[in-house]
Length: 402
Image (cartoon, rainbow, N blue to C red; front, side, top):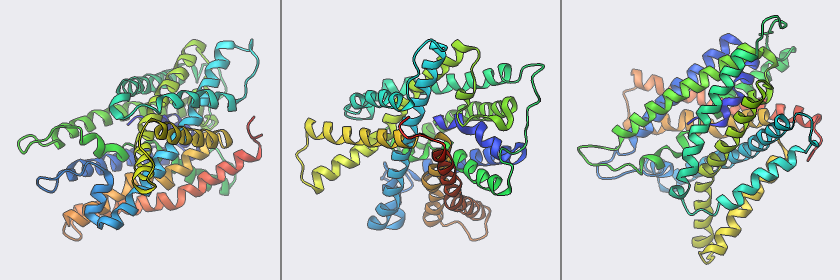
């Protein structure tokens, strides 16, 4: 649940301000916890049947063909966009680690090369056959995400706001009205990107044994509660602590903003690298599965190691190339957060719930679901505009492959 999007929350706060920023992050926390509860409940809503994939639940609600076309493209966009952002994050954190350790004594190396170094790891890890084979990497990633979140919080709170320093400005980052509006839209997308566990929730629940006496939803919900407790600890502390320390000067990645204590910030950036290595593979595995299924069943390729190496290496190379071309962490979060994450996280579970559970019209449940749907649709339509504008602004002053 705790992804690298947490590092962009102080920057999102700088585009929203204290009041709206707190409201948006808390509301996103509540809405996504509610929609995740819906998915856990719907996993075994038909007696004797388990919906082990998001698209299976969608097919049950919308029909076999329409459900597939509604859900699968959304999942693909989420997986691919997350891997692109993680390529950028991994490269930036490697560069920050290098710069802090060298402390000006080493030759400056382009960000492009660090993204390539990060991508090289995945040419090897992507050959692992399935989720179970990367469980160790995934476990390390989970621990690292909590560790670097706490480092970001404590370093921001202690070192980022020293006594005697100039007053921190908590005004909105942009000065023009247009800049403030587009900045707020970009921030909404960045917050959406941070809450992204729904895409693989049913796949995770599918691994839990289930009986009529002990359905899988009970242990799964306990897991969700623990995960969201960690989310609250990491997200609220980093978002509010980072914004308190830096105000509207917060960097799109809060760990890039911090420099002291040097050894601790260097270690935290290395933790980010370890985390996004594992997270990249978690989001890449469903894409590999879909790619190889299409290649074997539709295009009649022979299954085996040569196909796996070729297809998976091509995917890693594609995400690496896009990350090298557009290494704009802030704009990518805003664009993909709204365009990709809002549907699968904010409103598709509510639509499916209304179709399958059919709550009474104008009842509390009916109203809550429609409120979530409206918020999610607005996020999907509006926040990519802010993200795209941010990418364009970043590209104006950026020398490609520099």
